[in-house]
Image (cartoon, rainbow, N blue to C red; front, side, top):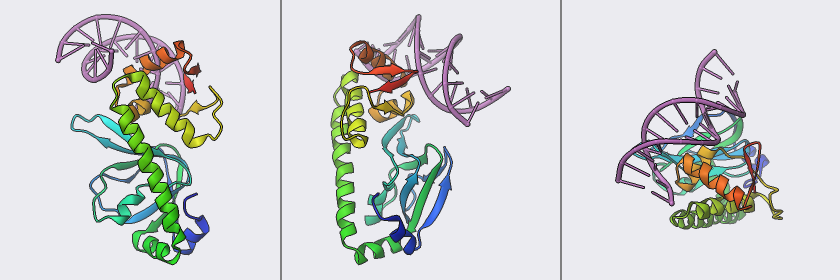
Amino acid sequence: MLIDEKLLYQYGAERMFFKSGDIIFNEGTSPFFYYQIVVGKVKLNHYNEEGKESIQNIILPGQSVGECLLFLDNFYPMNAEVLEETVLLKLSKTKFLELLNLYPYLYKDLSLFMSGELYHRFLLMQNNSINSPIIRLKGLLDYLKNETLEVAIPFSFKIDLTRQQLAGLTGMCVETVIRTVKLMESQNMLRLKKGKILY
DNA sequence: TCATTAAAGTTAT
DNA sequence: ATAACTTTAATGA
């Protein structure tokens, strides 16, 4: 995990419970808290003018949600929506910054985490601006697999995302994701088991 | 070629 | 049961 939970509690962090669909923060609001996921899953997203959703990232246990805004004097450029039963640790911005100053190694940990996020975001954006749907989807699957698994056994990794979420992450429409998944299955690039993608 | 629309089928709550 | 998600097909940029 990013920051030791005991340390967060010591500094006054509160445990918060969310259910699927709950909003942690909305685009355009000011960041006042540091959030770290204990269990569950959170998506960072944005809706364009036509209401089409793009997903920036899906955040897993041990990681923090929107932490980079705590170093800026700016509004959130995205929403954070909970995808399943989730437990979060929440610490006020001021306490969070105090904590960092007391334990400078946390700066290093955070830098490492944020750099990793930036790096992946960069790769995904490059990947998504290339037009072939297969390449887009493959790029995303590779990223998801590398993020969670150390050893890459083919077809061992279950993609626990809906087609809609894959569409949101690749900037394609759901139907295209479905067609592309089928195509990739026929080319033995992935396997399907009860509708779920094995990669 | 892919997005969009519509309609029907399937899964999850 | 109802909502959410998936699939297929037709059409248009």
